[in-house]
Image (cartoon, rainbow, N blue to C red; front, side, top):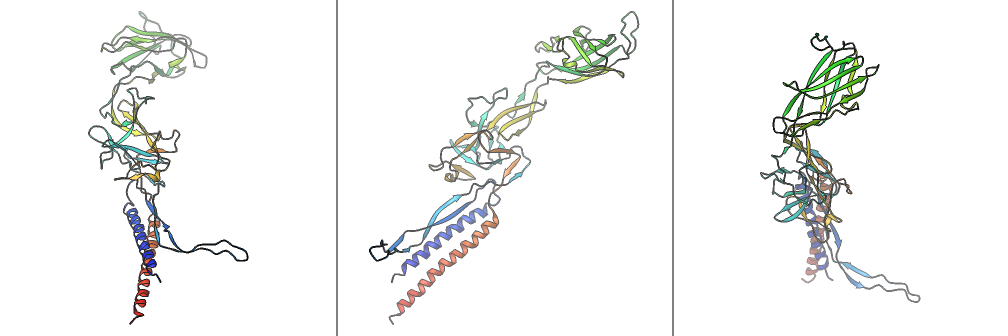
Length: 424
């Protein structure tokens, strides 16, 4: 009688359940680790010893089943579980959490790694890095005009944090307000100007260097439902643009002629041409002529001064948008994600990073939301996907499994002792 089989089977059970406890312990220890993906241990039956082979039925005799005794169990696999972790808002623009199957791409010591950890920050050189190990986030850098070139390569996301948004010269102005329909017709010198027949308003525009210039608009009533306009630079009587407006019987502007406003700044900036669409209502569409006080103001203009980078925001498709002090938003770069046919085949390294293996497949580089179900959530972090209740339940199962296998060994030992005692 061989009792060692049960001894060795019990030993394999002890070893396996110890491995299971090791996996559970690691999961629980990382219950609050950002982007952590828990694992599970599965067991498989080891080979069996055959005492009697099976035989097929023959003649009047039935078939005989094989007789086999199992020799224990082994660890079948230790699988990483890539289920989605909960997202938690952090308030930091550079904290990123992925929903979907994607991984952030990192570069460290000339090697690429992949991670779900997203607590990025900027280093002294402007690289977006994981602060714990300095691994640099990968993506595509934008051109100076804020576009991502079609042939842009995946590289370190190194942003110029001292970047400035260039000034833009005003090319279009829109005005809004009202001209009093009851105003008298303008009469020029030497006769006195009737009150209300002439109205002035001043607004600011920008040249190509970001300098402001004040333009004064003078409106004069030339007849029933007709007004002229004239533009001058503040402090100068010379006209830089003129035209006329016509209103219908409801006070709605019907035609506008004249323009554009044109002048050459003394600041060294490029010559300016500010459009008022000749023959169209255009930028005067907001002006009416009804009973009431005359007041015309600037509604909108498309110029601005240069600005400094104040903060960034990251969109769901990974675009990094720089917000500048002049109100402009310019794309600085775009985060690229990696996806794998078999993410469970990735090799764990350190600090939540993975490396590709022969069974993970080659990384497919994708843009979030474009042919991918992944999205990048700025200002949030993905938490560990470990379920504490489930881990405690598995711990109980592992404990009882270990105890049961230990009982196999002690019982077999007692039987062996009885066998030895047969000879006194």
